[in-house]
Image (cartoon, rainbow, N blue to C red):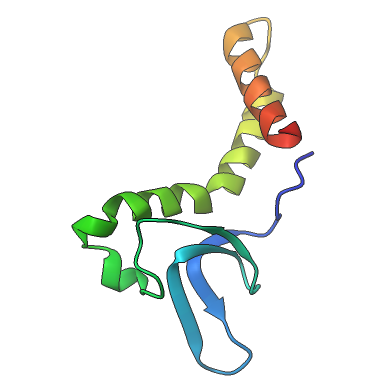
Length: 107
């Protein structure tokens, strides 16, 4: 099993202890936790999502951030697909998914 942070990951929204919230769209955080998972280059530091959504300068960085933030869900989905695939019918696909999951799990 993978040892990644198991909570849902999100782009930049981190609740503070008080009522106000801070936002840094350049970081990926574990849901409801002040724990940075990744910092994404190509996004302005301390910018809000609405400030960068239509920025051509941030388009690639934002696309990367969205991909990174959905990684745990993609991992879970690939694991589920692998479990349901019949390796005798889908041998090549099963091997590719297995190799990818193994690389994530073991490095």
